[in-house]
Structure formats: structure tokens, C-alpha cells
Image 1 (cartoon, helix red, strand yellow):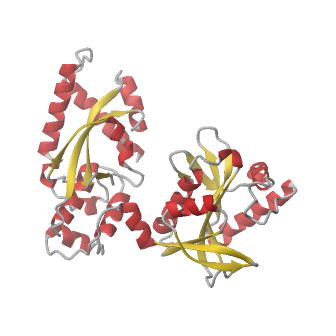
Image 2 (cartoon, helix red, strand yellow; image 1 turned 45 degrees about the vertical axis):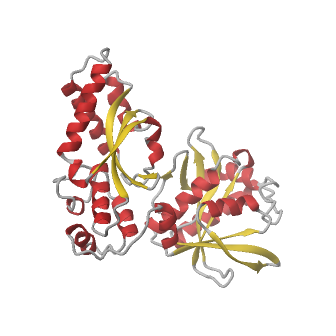
Image 3 (spheres, helix red, strand yellow; image 1 turned 90 degrees about the vertical axis):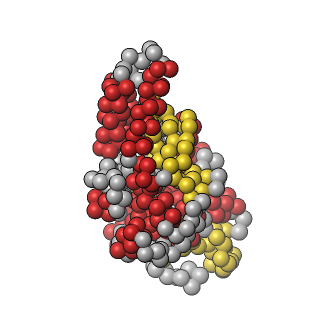
Length: 370
């Protein structure tokens, strides 16, 4: 397993023998077991046996439920993740089940949804699974809502040990579509960018987005040649979104726009640059960021975890650009914004050249941490 996994608020890691007290607090609570047969554990040894069983699944199947740690407190708050089901359920065997269980005081915070989404990403990207399944009781409306928020859909009901349960599923294709939110199309153009993707055995736009999103962050050897992403096996916000825009253009999908936004890069939206900003006595620096816009929504594929929410609260202006403008035009526009900003803030005693050098140090910080 590739662990730990970090979400915005949580850490997902292996369950350890030292989690016995947390597991006992979880599974001895009758409220937790309301929809699980009303059979809370009686002793901490019962919880230790569960931990050992799950650790056995790690050894036997390479996967099992994970401990969930709240970042802000360091507390064990429950478990989540994937379980390999090698016994039959509803006519299925040897499949992955997604599930979660939390101590009640952590209910209502969105943690189940946050961890279930991370579990699905792990299943479909790291494990390359074709489908994931789940089941829940008919009256456990909260659990069904979490699963449906994550894209699973009720397929049918079935009988299990005399109880009627919902059977839910999501395929990798369905997950990609709901995660991406952009139109899909087959890559068929004979133009250069399309042919570069086809040479990588990437056959649809959604597959292209998934590949580009997962490339490490880093500057390219030749920004003017967008296919350098494949040679370098990395990309920036500019090259990643420009190549996707160009691919869409080659298939006459012209309502997908490449956007350059100017935002306040600070320690909140880019924690990696906090040290450089502090050393330079700056609260933020105006930064240029490229992303896509389709209809009324923004899409950011700079890195696997990127979302427009990372920068939207600090966005100052945005303009539409073309893929060819990510080189000289973008740099000159950005430098003018910095010069204007310094002119409007005379208390900041840097020249435009000095501030650009600090900005370059920040970009280096980002690349080093990604």
C-alpha cells in the first residue's frame, strides 16, 4: 500500500496495534453500531483482534481499512478505506468495498465524504480497479448520502442474513466523468498534439486530463513545445492546461477556455512558500496561474489535489489567453502586474526585478515540495 494519504484535514494510514484504545472507543459505542446489528464490542481485546484481522488483510491482499487521524488534533477518529471481499455478497466475489466508521463526536464534519473520496481515488488510480462497491441498510440515510455524494449509485436491493440492504457501485469511467466535469471525446485528430497523446496510448479527453493531472509539477525543458510534457514527465500550470486546451481545439471544442488569473500567492493557499515570504517580509506576491474554464466553472489540473478553491478567494483578475501565449506574453503581463502593484504599494521597498527574483524563489519552493 502507498500510505499515508493526506486529505485537506485528515491523514489516512495503516491501522496499528497502538490504535487499540481508539478502536475500542469506536466499536464499544452502541450508537456506532445502530445500523451494524447492534453488537458493540465488550472488551479492548475484541478491538485488538479486529486490528490484527485487518493487518492480516494488508498481508494477504495488499489492502484493508485505514486509520483516520485528524490533522488539527492528532486524534484517532475512526477508520475508512477499501476492503477486498473474497466471500460472496449479492452475487459478487473478489471485489473492493468502500466503507468508513467514525467516533460519534466527529460526525457531521464531512469526514466520511472526505475519506471515501480519497479511497475511491486510491482504488481507481493507484490500484487501477474497474469498479468499487458498497452496501448499506435501507434506514441508514446518512451513509447512503455520503456514498451518493462520492458518485456511487444504488443498483438494487438484496438480502443479506435476513436483512434487506442497498447495493451501490461506481465504475472507473463513471468516477472519471463526475470527477472531471468536462465533456469527453475520442482523440481522433491527425494534428500534432492529438498524435502525441495517441502515441502515449491515451485515447479520450478524460484519459488525457487524468494523465496530465498526475504528472509531477515542474518546469519544462521547452515551454513552447507542449509535447515536452511527455519527454520531461512533468509540467506546470501553464503547460498542463495549454496542452489540454490545444487538444480540445484540435477537436473543435472551442468553448473550453484557457485562463490566466492573477491571485495573491500567500502562506494560506501555497504553504510551501511561507518561509520565503516571511524572510522577505511579504504577506503575499501577485502570481499568475493558468487553468481552464468551461461554461461557468473553473478547472485546475496543476497537480493531483488541485482545485479552483485553492486560489479563488485570492483571485484579483483573469483574462483568456491562447496556448501560444504561455511563454513571452504571460511573463510580460505578469511583470507589468508586479510593477503596477509595487507602484501602488510604495511601502514595499523592492524593485520589480528584486520582487521577480523572490517570486522565482517561491516557484522553486513549490517545485521542491510537489
